[in-house]
Image (cartoon, rainbow, N blue to C red; front, side, top):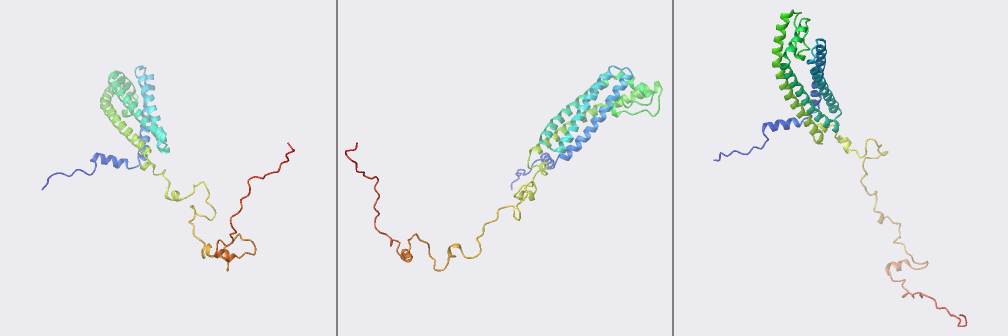
Length: 299
């Protein structure tokens, strides 16, 4: 009895999952991801420029350039994802290829902005707390800590605002770190999906190109759709079939055998029975030139 295992006949589970996902059309997935990430980048763009306005009003010169840089980078990422929506909807090879690389650049931008926010969150702690305390006394601080911030229930005095902002800063510290980690992971996943969709567009047998293939009726039609078919005719040349009746070689008039080049009055039947009946002997060849008599007196 043999205890030797048979070699596996199927791919590992991870490869089976990839094959199963790749076997489906990734176009709707790319469109959905592009829409979600474009809206997410747009929300952060608006939040960054709101923070810039607050930093200018509160005379915090260190935070204003950071808000400008973050707003521009988020706006560029939003533009890249909007381009991805157009590329996936039109399904053009050049656009899809460009979007795959732009998606990778968007991941780098989001990762760069996330790291920038983490660093500045701890480096400029006093500036963040100062701006938050000023805004908390008016009942609004959500632009200080981005889209994750919350507003106080009511207007606070200076001591309450300072304690409230300290708690918000501690809460935002963990949120910023988790956000940059998930941003990088999701960015890598979205980039992999974009390149997988690009590979699908390259593959003529993939489900992404199923809508581009001609239908069975179009493939069976012998004429293109922009040409009119012939009147009362099929798409292909009909198969030849002989006409009804006897073959043409047997359809001759009565008492007819064949024609001849014999002169009038000669027996055609004799010619038919004896093919050499009109032979008169060998023909005399014609002279190749004529001999002319010349007068010796004429020079």
